[in-house]
Amino acid sequence: MTDFSGKAALVVGGSRGIGAAIVRRLAADGAAVTFSYSGATDAAHALATETGARAVRSDAADRDAVIGLVAEAGPIDILVVNAGVLVFGDPLEQEADVVDRMLDINIRAPYHAAVEAARRMPDNGRIIFIGSTNGDRIPFEGGAAYALTKSAIQGLTRGLARDFGARGITVNTVQPGPTDTDMNPGDGPMKDFMHTFMAIKRHAHPEEVAGMVAYLAGPEAGIVTGALHTIDGGFAA
Ligand code: NDP
Image (cartoon, rainbow, N blue to C red; front, side, top):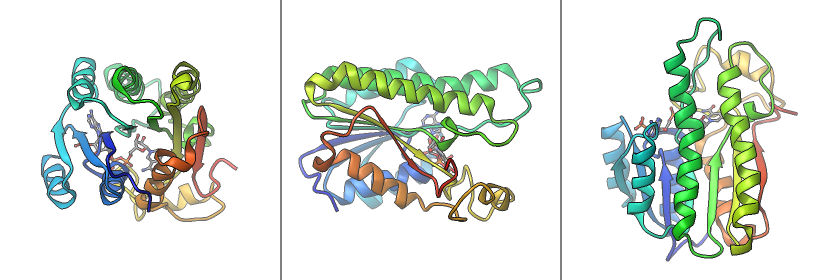
């Protein structure tokens, strides 16, 4: 457990999966948590009731909505940008609009959320992106556009760490591997294929990823910045 009492946290995309585990962990450790969602209204309301966090409907594909969400949240000590979508497929067959929407959610939203948060963030704040091990390694076909989005987050992390370092604000990316969520179910048809690339052949639990986020958000990680933190069972090893 980390003591986040007195800290305000915003989790962009927190209704389900890894984001929901992060909301639970930060709230359990004492933070005042706001989280956004776009479609899973019932899950968001249930999570808000369970944790005491505040749920706000806001589409991460909409730049103005992202900036408005962050501005409305006020000064944030901890920003976690988790919202993400996964579109796999043959690049010669994929619909351009579907790919572009993924670029909006996975790349543009983290950029604008982080910049807007930094305008009001107190010194020694925390910005944490949820990237993917696929930013480092994409060992199968059909993942070029998704890998592009997660590699982009790596450059964003390094650059913003330089921009905000003088204020003690750290900027880091957590890079999960296969993690048991709606996006990538641990009992889904792809599980055995995914596990062939891993040293520890199981999906991560979302709570394990949330634990790494809690470390990076906490006081022990004040000198950790501009870095990629892979939690993938050896997928990229
Ligand atoms: P899920 O699909 O299970 O959950 C995605 C979350 O993001 C939901 O809370 C969803 O909310 C939110 N979200 C999606 N689109 C939007 C949007 N347009 N606006 C606001 N919120 C949105 O995914 P995971 O939990 O598995 O993934 C979370 C992150 O982790 C993503 O960035 C993903 O790329 C990354 N990741 C996941 C891995 C895995 O194996 N699961 C592996 C590596 C990285 P709602 O449904 O309410 O819109």
